[in-house]
Length: 536
Image 1: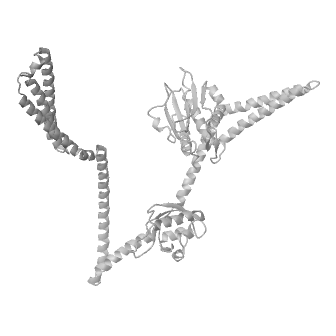
Image 2: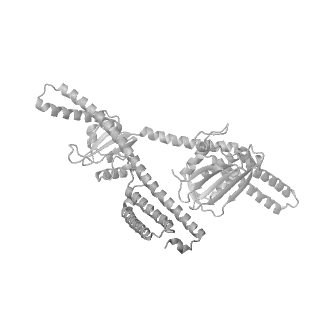
Image 3: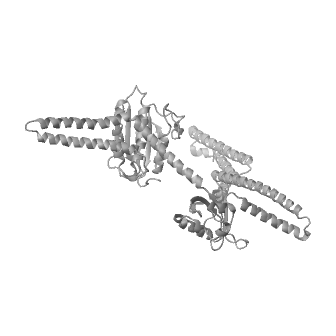
């Protein structure tokens, strides 16, 4: 009997099944058409048969739903069962095929891997093209030299002409490069003596070629660098390092010390006519002197920046010193009055003298802080309490803050661990950030001028210091350049404050950054690792 009998020919139930099965059949028929169209268009597919099998399987599934509609009125259940049997075979075949190719599909490279492979292939092609170009140039030069040498030896015996020309050309190339080179070239023998040296190296160290043959690298190396030189020779002999330049010091024959850059290649193999270790030695004394001069100039510029900031704080400094001095004068006058009593009021005199001593020590501490910020000394490492260093800077800038009507909110986390750092340099960074914050708020008139200084520990256990202002904020166009040397937005600025501050924080193995404040202003912050120390 037709399947509609099972539904008692209820119209709404039959309509529900007809609509549902018809929509499913239409969807199932559209999917394999899309898959087959995709396979026809993409001829580079790895497993096209899987797409075809999947399309046939879905097509068969759609047919079973179409038969469900047909059997509502026509009881062709054998045809329906046959279609389901075909669908079962296709589903089993599709499942087996999918699991069979699954390892191969998983082994297919990803898009990122293909892009990386293409990039490496492009680099390799570029290197190969450059190598081929260099080889062509070398071949052209070699052909020219061989032709010139062959022309000079036309009267020689034909049997020896080609062999001798090639040998002499090769020897001449090596000799001309060896002797005319502007850098020193040497070959060490098995006893680690100079088997051969060129004129440039001989002039560099002040020894003649004969004298050099009785010497080795350790003999002319500065005594403090001999251990490193010995290790370099041993590493080259053992094949551990090749073509790695090393900077060391040589002592010339006249006892003058020079800096050299040594590039030692691997030891020559046993088939070479010259046994030993070839090396190229370059005199870098002038470069080293320039580096020292650069470091000295940077330190001098850092000190000049500190002095510039101290000059801007001259009013605050004067106020800090005048307060204890005025208190000392007042207490001294009080002592005179108490001593003029009959009898003298010695208890009051004692209290006044105590106040004088305390005020004198306070003035001394102010001068000591000012001198520490302005003195020209090398970085001094020591245990530093970051909160105490920040508090000293805020005390030093108190009058400057008051003069510009800036309120300070200090949120310093208690019991911060001390760090190994240079106290004066860290105070210079904080002082520069505070002064920049004051400058940023000079034009602010529609909101309070608030400078927030915060210290805390981050998730990595490092100290983080933030200085936030309520000023005009950062210009997005200049945000990436504010740490560059000589870049400034102030008409009278030097453009070195943030650059030097960044150098100081990096020397402490930290990081200095800037970001926009919320809802206005700017935030400058830096991190200080607890155990990083200070780089020389």
